[in-house]
Image (cartoon, rainbow, N blue to C red):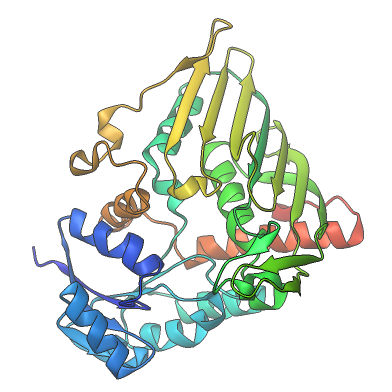
Length: 359
């Protein structure tokens, strides 16, 4: 079978997410060929092509999407640019994989879903491809904890702490579409959905406790209006009570701790990195009162990636493997997640308890 020919929008010789995760992930999964890339200019694209050994380079993403030797367009740039880059790829009839978030707003996401009707799409919600979380889902399904009574998660945002890194200032304000709500919280609530089900009802509190942060490049104090504290509690569709709290920055105590309690046992997932969906996860469980480490069975992992779960490309590679089987969340799924984020925002704004699935 001929490989899927991939074109990446946003692959730069200077690094970035596409270079760190997508390039090694594609190299690790049989069935793909990295055939093309586009950059901010023809010259920068040519330099990136030479660095990564990519034969087709473009200064215009629409030209990449229109090229007959590209089957799958991967969009790995700031979310504020997604709609303008994705729509031409869809119009060209190409498969599209968009990094998360899909749209910079709910309206943008709805427009992209409409444009994608009848086309093959996927979004970068990598937690759904993490072997440890897929094993966790199956343990719950197979009754390891019995009936799920409650679940609680405390995590960190990674960004949105006391300082802002170079090139991340666009994440400080909601208008850019890339905030703690739309990125780490979205990945977290989607993991809840995969493992335990959706929120049937929820109540949210959001706050910007640090209204100013330090620019790590200039040392200046700059304003931040995006939330750096998000707390959500509610009831999942299965009846379990759930609480979720994300804090900006990082914590020396714990950056990711997820506990699931049931009538017959307990499961705990932890990570040393706030970005759990691309981090090494540790799974522990107890049915006797003592927590013990649980090893993820080999059947959940690509054999060529054994021992590499701490690498950013690990879950991305598993996502590409699932994409070959048509088993990744699509744009319609992305819209459901964006609507949950909208419900969280409205609950926090109005102080009301909402039922996301009933709206």
